[in-house]
Image (cartoon, rainbow, N blue to C red; front, side, top):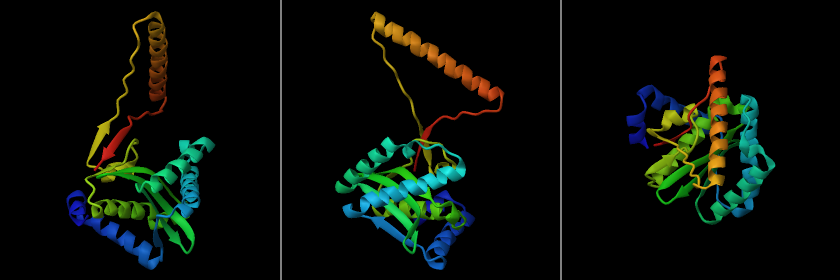
Amino acid sequence: MDEFLLTRFRRKKRYNLKRQIRIALDEQGLVHERVDKQADIERSVADLIALHQKRADEKGIVSKILTDSARSFFQDYCRLALERGCLNLQFLKSNETRVSAVCALEMKDKVFFLQSGIDPEWEKWSVGTVLLTLLIEDAFLGQKVEFDFLKGDEQYKSTWASEARVEFRKVLYRKDWGGRVLYGLHKGLSLVKHSVKVLLGLFGGSSSTHRSPTG
């Protein structure tokens, strides 16, 4: 981890990271917790989603995981992942109140970053950055060779990532009349979406390409 930080960040950034960890754990007395028991998983995933929602509300973001069906799926997903020994769910907590959360999936020699959340009231203590740093350190301790942030172009991902994979999608159509009809409909829809993006650009809107940073 120290070697990675040395090659990735300047001296001031490395100092600030270590200082943030020291302040959070030593001065603020936050406890670093990793969930490893099935009996705790339901409440822990609920706490993760609650922290994610607080962050989304504070930022004015609409998150897909906040729907009832997504919550239920994520609960089942994390329960099965923990059962199979590949879930890495961590928190920082003040007394018994969890203030920051990260969730990742570990598969062989890779780590896939799934979700995170923080209590905005603790943001001034950089609890999100601190916990993410500890999660990445975990990857080094576990001798993982890749930490994949998955889809999204958030700023914190580009801070850590050393490269990005561009995501593509290919759609195939059959050569019969049904396939030609579908192709025409989808082509027309694509033109409409492109026109909307152009108009948004003209009137101050923006769009972005989703990338999958890895490091």
